[in-house]
Length: 68
Image: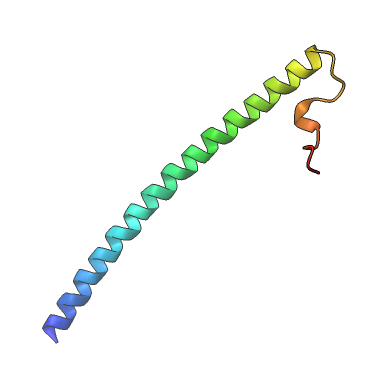
């Protein structure tokens, strides 16, 4: 029974480490997604402003893509 307990403890330690590693990955990905979302929003605003400055009537960000 002692070997079984030891094996379970080792498995639990391994799984705890994997969960911690995955948690770090998810946290990094969340930060990256938030950063990229902000950049896309800024690019859309800039494109819409350029479109309006060029005399366009509908900002690019508000137009439907041509495949719709």
